[in-house]
Amino acid sequence: MPPALPSIIEEFDATLRQAGWLLSTINLITALAGMVIALTADRFGHRLLVLLGTALCFAASLLGAFAGSVDMLLVGRVFEGLGFIAVVVALPTLLLRIARPADQRLVMTLWTSYMPAGAGTMMLIAAVVLPGTSWRIAWLVASGASALMLAVLLLRALPRRELDPVPVKRRPVLHEMAEVASSGGPLAIALCFGAYSCCWFAVIGFLPTLQVERLGFATSTAAIVTAVVTIVNVGGNLGAGWLMHHGLPRVAVIVGAAVSMAFCAAGIFVDGVPDLLRLLLAGVYSAVIGVVPGALFTALPVHAPRPELVGASTGLLMQGSNIGALVGPPITGALVAAAGWPSAAWLTSVALGVMAGAGLFLHWRERRKLLS
Image 1 (cartoon, helix red, strand yellow):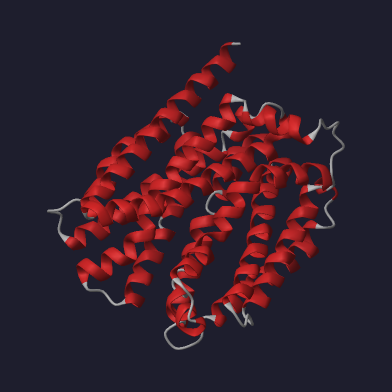
Image 2 (cartoon, one colour):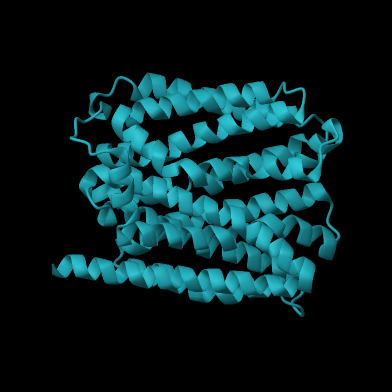
């Protein structure tokens, strides 16, 4: 959506308010409904929800490619958001089920790379195809990717008996929501992920503007650089698994990244830093801070109140993540408008401080569990 937005505004004569909704709809749906959809998966089957969510993404993106108005495109974004959240809250439970216990941490760190890998790849595709074609091509690409994923799931995942729903005695939905939300571990994970998303999207969201305004880059060049900076986040996701596999505690991964990257993020915005160095700092920041999602996703099985509530805990994590993604860019924009680019460093510093505090709390909870 971000690279395509100028073309959409021009074609439909859309307002800035409509543009904002197009950008934030998917985050808003996930922020509101993450845990509810996760508990739905627990009751109706995680594999079924993954299949339905993927089919919904395929259909919504395909229809969006032929939208005749902003309102029709916005409706498509709502259904894309529902499909997206259905997949991402249901898949971790299936991954934990088919992975050997010794491999679960590795599997979960591999899983965390879905967002930067997918988003970065789509940004690159959009940056390449948009200058010479319509924004609708990007939607057709997204629809085709979902169709391919759906075909693979039907062929490979549908026949696997170990992915069949496991009969579990369930408690009322509101009771389970309260159980997860009031449990210190999942709540701290959600808060930590929210703080991470807040400052990561603040940097990534305004990186194209920073390049155009300060470096004089063309919009397409800025989009490609931003895509590369997004993709290198995958290295951090995978690095978290390697670090913890070699004995580095989760608290060291989270707090170490938060403290060191607070200075790196500040260097992106403050005055006096050479402009090209800002881009290098943005790449380093994205790569290093990427260890946090890997550390947090692997914490879900440890901190879920009960094994059958790992899915609901994932939903709460996704809600925290998307709340952070929703509030980070607007706050950054307000700070920059009021006091210039250096003021954005206050947001990243505070958010990373919250992330470090949540990481220390998780460590305290884990030590209590080991001692009890």
